[in-house]
Image (cartoon, rainbow, N blue to C red; front, side):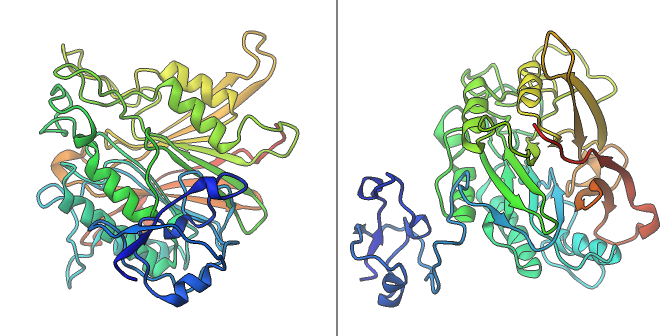
Length: 408
């Protein structure tokens, strides 16, 4: 039986959507696994090399089924969500060892130690806003996977509690993705194959064409939190002209709105809404050089994206990209051009969580922490290092309180 794998047939189900996504593209492992699905008909095909071989011992359809945009709410047991960005796992441009040693700690342990100092013993999930790798290579994605697995192990997280978006280093549209002015030399599926394989291994589901995903979390104090993860590296159509960075596109934004159900029933209490992407939404750098052929750090369709954020009443935007922590609060009219109702958006930029010192502007690596309490939401950014040399009382970069939730 192990020479066969499960295949998805949505048309077999009355809803036209299968509820057994966890099993697809995975070999049949045992008769017990078949019985746990509590069904009478399976569709199968010959197993291929890339199929999963793990066994699903206990399967409960009331639990979250792997998907890009989960229809089910993911219940968290703690209100703390760490946020990392620009990890840049590589042999030569990552500042932490792969495994912790006597004098140096790896990235996952550095975050864990800082959380323990803050007396935070557990976390509810993990957010990653792009550039997991330096060159988009398979071995770098393997290192990124190990980082996520390490955190899942000590934090007891499932894949549904991890949310990730790609950065321009992950979608290698040139042989030097770190060189911002280099034009694209690769276009098409080959340039994103490694990221797609990483994504599918993490979530056990094929990504959308835009590489976007989203979750709805239930925080212990009763707060609902929606997080939409967007791909801002979709500009890839023109070889020798663009490097594949800094663009979202109307199609992706429309599809994310529908998948997150943000356009439905505006009378109910709105969940706290977060959008995560890799590139900048508003200017963060003090001054960018106007060199011919050099792409700016802000997404090309920033105006359209800001309008989308206002229309969907997004509360918080998370991004990385230029390895520079920053915080911006924007107020924009909900009913433009009347401008009688205003909505505030907090836009947070994170410095690099893992890149080596020669690629960050004279500051340590950092990570973010989102804490949901009965009084509201607090976002903090803190410094970390492999040698743990930064005193705990000097690690806070910035901290801000966000408005409490309100009716739409």
